[in-house]
Amino acid sequence: MSTSSTPPAPPPSNRISGTAISKEIRAELAVECSSIKSTVTPGLAVILVGSRPDSLAYVRMKKKACAEVGIDSFGYDYPETVTQQELIDKVNELNADPKVHGILVQLPLPNHIVENLVTSAVHPDKDVDGLHPLNCAKLVTAQTHGGSVKMNWKDLKSIPFHIACTPQGCIELLDRSGVEIEGKRAVVIGRSNLVGMPVSLLLNHRNATITIVHSRTIDAQSVVRTADIVIAAVGRAKMVKSDWLKEGAVVIDVGINSVDAPDTKKGYRLVGDVDFDECEGKCEKITPVPGGVGPMTIAMLLRNTVNSAKRVCGI
Amino acid sequence: MSTSSTPPAPPPSNRISGTAISKEIRAELAVECSSIKSTVTPGLAVILVGSRPDSLAYVRMKKKACAEVGIDSFGYDYPETVTQQELIDKVNELNADPKVHGILVQLPLPNHIVENLVTSAVHPDKDVDGLHPLNCAKLVTAQTHGGSVKMNWKDLKSIPFHIACTPQGCIELLDRSGVEIEGKRAVVIGRSNLVGMPVSLLLNHRNATITIVHSRTIDAQSVVRTADIVIAAVGRAKMVKSDWLKEGAVVIDVGINSVDAPDTKKGYRLVGDVDFDECEGKCEKITPVPGGVGPMTIAMLLRNTVNSAKRVCGI
Ligand SMILES: NC(=O)C1=CN([C@@H]2O[C@H](COP(=O)(O)OP(=O)(O)OC[C@H]3O[C@@H](n4cnc5c(N)ncnc54)[C@H](OP(=O)(O)O)[C@@H]3O)[C@@H](O)[C@H]2O)C=CC1
Ligand SMILES: NC(=O)C1=CN([C@@H]2O[C@H](COP(=O)(O)OP(=O)(O)OC[C@H]3O[C@@H](n4cnc5c(N)ncnc54)[C@H](OP(=O)(O)O)[C@@H]3O)[C@@H](O)[C@H]2O)C=CC1
Image 1 (cartoon, rainbow over the protein chains, first blue to last red):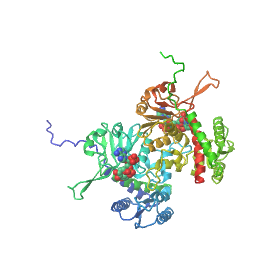
Image 2 (cartoon, rainbow over the protein chains, first blue to last red):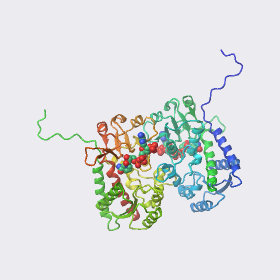
Image 3 (tube, protein in one colour):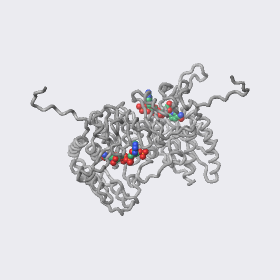
Image 4 (cartoon, chains in turn green, purple):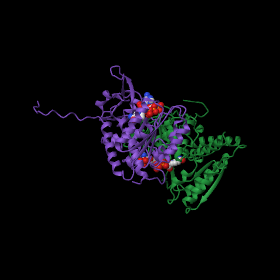
C-alpha cells in the first residue's frame, strides 16, 4: 500500500488530440507567416454559394483560422441562383490575381452546377483543396514515372503540389503522435475521392501495405482485424466495434455523424465511424470525434495556402 | 476398367490462355474496323527512338497487329540523338492530325529526354497507352466526384477515357475466363504507374477489396495468402511460390523475366513472377508466361485505338 502523498500520475492517455496537434501546427504557421511577411502575405479566396448553415459555419471557421495565423482571406458570397459560368469566371479572375495563393470553393454547390467543372477550373497551383485532377494524378504517379522528381513523403510540407486536406491531416496526426507507418498494414475503410482514396495513396507512399475496404467488401470486420493502422472514413455512426480491431491497433476516425441525443441542448451529438467507448481500451492510439481529424483539415488548408505563397515566391 | 475406345477427355485446363483470348479480341476488332470503315479507319502513330532490339521488336509486333485488324499505323523513327523538343513537336503535329487516333511513344527513351514530358504532350484523347496524368486522374476519381458520369466498369470498352493497356488486359483475362471479381479479395504485388497501381484501381472499381504489396511489405507471403485473386507485377523470376497461395486462388502473372537456359538455342528463357510449375496445381486458374498477359497488352492497345477513332466520330 502506497503511502506517498503525491497522487499517482494519470495513466498515459492513448488519445490522439487533433485539437492540440492542430493548434501546434497553426502556431508554427503563424511563426512562418510572420517570418515571410516582408516578402509575401499568403492569401486565400473563399467562394461560398447559398446559405447552408453547415457551409456558413465552415467558411466562418476557415476565415477566422486564416486571420489567426496571418493569412489574408477574401470572401466571395453568391446566392443559390448563381450560374456555373459566373463561378468559373470568378475562379479565372482569382487564378490571375497575385494576392491569391489558394482558392477554396466551399462544397456542396447547388444541383444546377456541375461541381467538378468549377473545382477543375481552379489553377492546380492554387488548388489548396487538392481536388484538381492534375493534383490527384500526381498523388498516384509521382513516385515511379520516368523523369519524375523523387518525393520526400516523410515531409508532406516539402511535396511540391497540393494534397487534399483531410487525408494529409490523417498522416500528420500519425506522424506527430510517433506512430511508425513504414512496413505497417493499414486498412482504410472508405474509398471516396475526398478521403479514402487519397489517404490510401499517402499511406502507400509512406510504405504501409494498404487494403481498401468499401461497401461491397465481404466480411469487412475480418479485414479490418488485420490492420496495425485503421483509417475509418465511411459516414456510419459507430460502425467499427472493438472486435473489429487487432489488440494495439492505431485508429484514425474521420467520420462525423450526427446522432439523436434528446438529453442535450442541441438534441444531437457528433460521433465518429468508430465506437470510441468500446474501442479505446483496445487501441494503442485513437482519435476522438470531435477533436480528432476535424481540426486538422483546416490546419492543412492553412498549410497548403502558406506553402503555395512560398512556392510562388521561391522561398 | 474402362473399355471405351475413345480416349478420356483431358482434364479441364486451369490455364488462362492470353494467346487465345487476345486472338479472340483481335478478331472482334477486325470485324469492328470493317464495319466502321466507310466512316473511319483507326490510325495509330508509333514513335520509336534509337535501336534497342526489344523496342524494335515491340514496335514491329504492334504495327503487324494493327495491319491484321485494319488499323493504319504510321511509324516515326528517330536516332538516339533526337532532342526532346523534336519529339514534342512531332507529338503536337500528330495531336492535330485527324488521321491519327492514337499516339504511342515506345519507352524507354534515351536518358537525355525527360520521358514524362514527352508522354504528357500527347493529347489525352490520343493517349492510347493511358499514361497521361489526366487519364491517370480519371482512373482514381471517376467514380464519386460531384457531377461525374457513372462509369460501367464491367465493360471497359465503354469507359470514355484511355486506360493503360497491361492493367486493362489483366481485367479482360479475368472476365473472359469467367472469374468473378466483385466482392473478392485481390492482392496486387507491385505498385508501379504502369501496372501495379492502375490494375489495383481497376480491381477496386470492380468492387474487389484490394491490397497492394511492394518491396517494403513485411511478410508479403502471408498477405498474398489471403487473396482470392493475385496479380503479380514485380519483375522477379518465380518469386511467388505455391505456399504463398490460398488453395483455389486465381493468379495473373504479369512478370516477364529472362533466366539463363544454357540448354536452349537462345541461351535464356522467359519466366513470370510466379513459379508456374509449383503453383499450377494449387490454382483455380493461372496465366502462363509467355502466352498470358503479354499478348493482351497489344490487344488492348488496338482496342484503345479503335475506341478512340469511334469516339472522335461519335460512333
Ligand atoms: N473530419 C473531417 O474534416 C472530414 C470528415 N468527413 C467525414 O468522413 C466520412 C466519410 O466522408 P466521405 O469520404 O466524403 O464519404 P463518402 O460518402 O463519399 O464515402 C463513404 C465511403 O464509405 C464506404 N462505405 C459505406 N458504407 C460502408 C460499409 N457499410 N462498410 C464499408 N464501407 C462503407 C463507401 O463505399 P462505396 O464506395 O462502396 O459506396 C464509400 O467509399 C463522413 O462521415 C464525413 O462526414 C469527410 C471529410 C472531412
Ligand atoms: N506482360 C506485359 O505486357 C508487361 C509485363 N511487364 C512486366 O511486369 C513486371 C513489373 O513491371 P513494372 O510494374 O513496370 O515494374 P517496376 O519495376 O516499375 O515495379 C515493380 C514493382 O514491384 C515491387 N517489388 C520489387 N521487389 C519486390 C519484392 N521483393 N516484393 C514485393 N514487391 C516487390 C516494387 O516495389 P517498390 O515500389 O517498393 O519498389 C515495384 O512497385 C516486369 O517483369 C515487367 O517486365 C510490364 C509491363 C507490361
